[in-house]
Image 1 (spheres, rainbow, N blue to C red):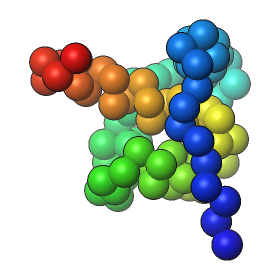
Image 2 (cartoon, rainbow, N blue to C red):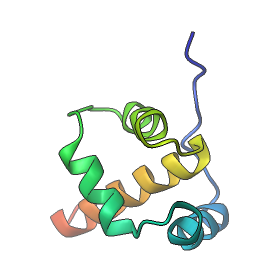
Image 3 (spheres, rainbow, N blue to C red):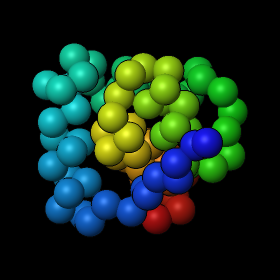
Image 4 (cartoon, rainbow, N blue to C red):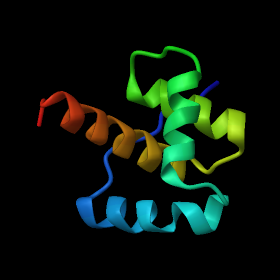
Length: 81
């Protein structure tokens, strides 16, 4: 049974997690964004975060933070913010 995960970090926690992603994971955010873009076409953010965590061995906190940042930047590029 899969445990539901929260994608609701506080803005402060989100910023802290994102700042530490390269040091903790050994990969920069653009590399993670490319992995998401090239991965399965999940519609929901929680599905993408679960896949990222399972496929790449990330904790769910970092996976969720990466997905949230990816979505934020994608929406920003598309003018949805």
